[in-house]
Image (cartoon, rainbow, N blue to C red; front, top):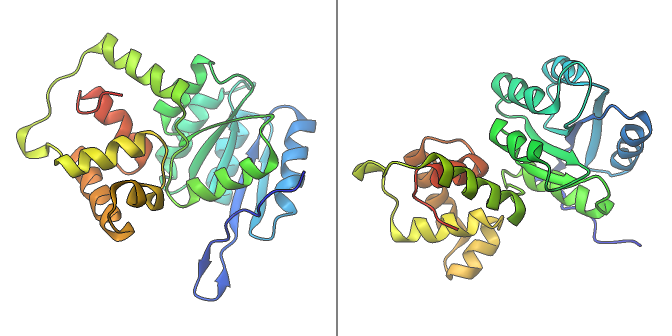
Length: 229
């Protein structure tokens, strides 16, 4: 079944190609995903890797925009590979590819720096949209993972944030919608404000929480007791 084409990212009049590293220890799965991506005009497969160590090595060498990362792999698991890639390449975004959305490793992978996850049997249009979304700086948090974050925070406890770092009421509104995975455009529509205003609030949230992206913002807010879903 055909679906809408993934959004094309442009700079001026030129199409910006999103370069992707595909990581999976099953050659058939890896090659199938790579073949799907290669057929899209605004996506390019920068490389493939069959285990965690190779993933880190190729990511550092190729510097892809997005990494599609399996979790259960030989030599080095996906969680540690994500952690190493994000430490060395903070501008490279990672999407977890998993068979089960209830896997504890999914939660660990997001803690390590992944933007979110996709099931391996997700429709190809969903995969294309996910790649474009994380490249735009959006996250792919889903309810099952958000619930795990909440449970973990409840176990650890949280200290109240310093007074100077407290978010405004409007910033809290934006943060709650971010936690639901909504992009700036949808947040603007929900709150009846402009998209540029949303971007200003998001930047302020990042600065106050000391984070670099949406997934980190939601995780930090939950851990510090600022956000309750």
